[in-house]
Amino acid sequence: MSKSSKLTATMDAEQVQFAADVLASIRQARQGEFARVHTPEMITARRAGRPVGSVKTSTKRPTTLRLDDEVLARWRASGKG
Image (cartoon, rainbow, N blue to C red; front, side, top):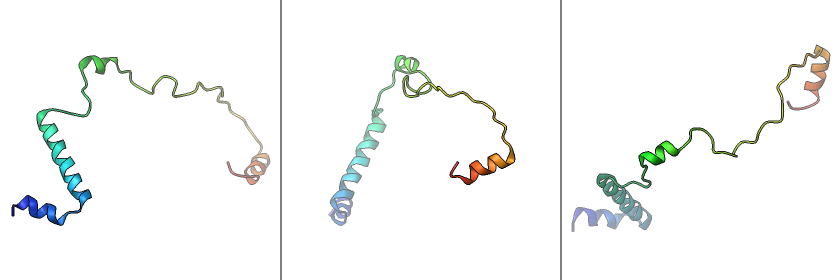
């Protein structure tokens, strides 16, 4: 009995599948095959940052508000935040 057949005899089906997948990945890496091919054109066409439309434009404006200590304590006592 060979070493690999002894090893697979003690492994369950999930472990055998995992080992086969790892070996396939190693073969692909050695041959230069990868999950996605990136050509120079694809790299230069890609824009940096978030995809367009993934962030809403902000309708809020930053401001500064000065409050008395008593007012601020009242707001903090009224809940989270």
